[in-house]
Length: 239
Image (cartoon, rainbow, N blue to C red; front, top):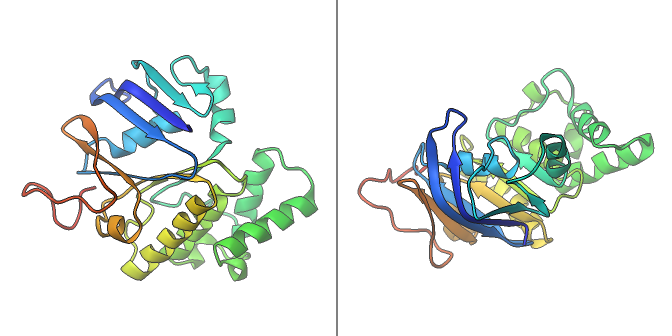
């Protein structure tokens, strides 16, 4: 098991309680959705996985073989190197082209041989169908293209886990489906994917395990189809 939270309490940095008594498990190759309204705790839950937010109260809080309850700050980079993170706003380095963005990540994670770095960059760009954009600057790319590059960056080190925070937000339906095809394909190859989304239609098109943040709790929903919306939920977004 990659993630195992049992009876965990999650707080914001200011100490405000976000989610209580969280039970959350993710296995190898599993595709997991986190849904819920704005401010319900989706992003906070994801941030605990890569330790931007910390878990201080839990019966158990494990990611890979790391115990988050006792994990020292100096070991957080090692934890993060085992996962890829995809942000809603891409977070590409604006002052360098696609190739140099990817080079930066590989160099920061210990790659040293130029030929191996170049080969790995070509491989991941091929995987996301962006080989011809290698020399483009981020501002020259569309939103969908930037998200593809962000996914390429996330898979550079062949992680066991991808954490994606609203990866299809602000993308048109066709582009969003292309991003989901990529993430679904990654999961089918054995990498677990945990993503938050407000696009409920995706749950029917790309089935997976569904958790919902609601009123300070995390609920695992039955089945793999899109949940029914309540009258208090926005029919377009449950972000």
